[in-house]
Length: 184
Image (cartoon, rainbow, N blue to C red):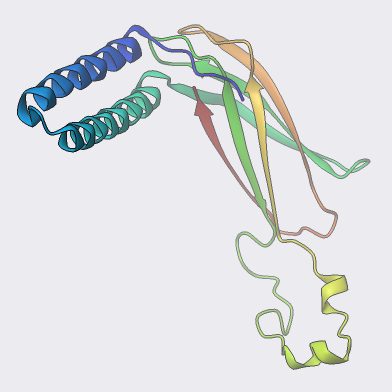
């Protein structure tokens, strides 16, 4: 797993929650006085609240400081090895360096509807006792893949080319392609 790149805002958020934790511990010591059980429970509660706040703060900062967009995305089906090749460029449109980007790709068979054969939606289940061959003929209608398209960083305003290859089953017809970009 790749570790996200922390900006100055990330470190300030972590420092804020550390100072808040120290402040809450000092208040807990003053409030609990000689009661050790109360002191421990207040310190644990303070830790849980500040840890949750810090994690949530870092996740929110990751979402809003690391921005990128896809440019000129094209797709091409390669029949020799039954794959789909996506090519394009990714651009850092934020003000901070991006450590890595991953592209989640979803290819759906009959994505726009139509072309359904008779009996697609209703299949009786009672015949399984007698060795129905439906399980042998079952084919997935969705292909999901995640590909890392930027591994070595992307500076603000920088553009890099990428390509991603996913399987394209030969029985797919009227496909729908959906992809999402996640950068950290």
